[in-house]
Figure 1 (cartoon, rainbow, N blue to C red):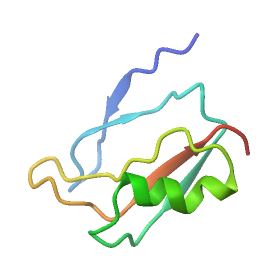
Figure 2 (cartoon, rainbow, N blue to C red; figure 1 turned 180 degrees about the horizontal axis):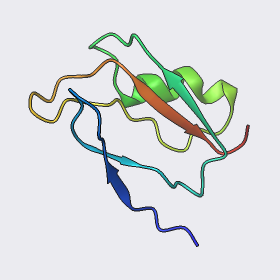
Figure 3 (cartoon, one colour; figure 1 turned 30 degrees about the horizontal axis):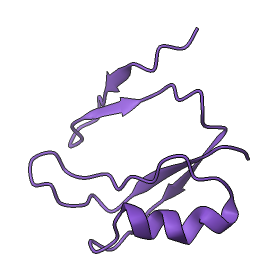
Figure 4 (tube, rainbow, N blue to C red; figure 1 turned 120 degrees about the horizontal axis):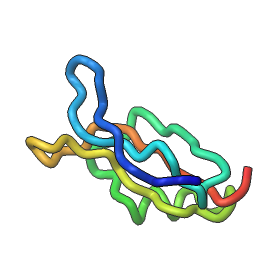
Length: 78
């Protein structure tokens, strides 16, 4: 049974929560070196030709709100 509960990151210099169980996602793609101007709409538009994008979120620093420069894009199918 999936719970979709967050787990705290346990690495030096990283703060926040990650969701380790996303049953609706078949495949996650890591995207790095994102420019600060990249937002969720731009990410989704860029990758929707690769398949059904479930959720395009830019990971932001919790203290500053600034982009951390990466994203995990979940797709419905691999």
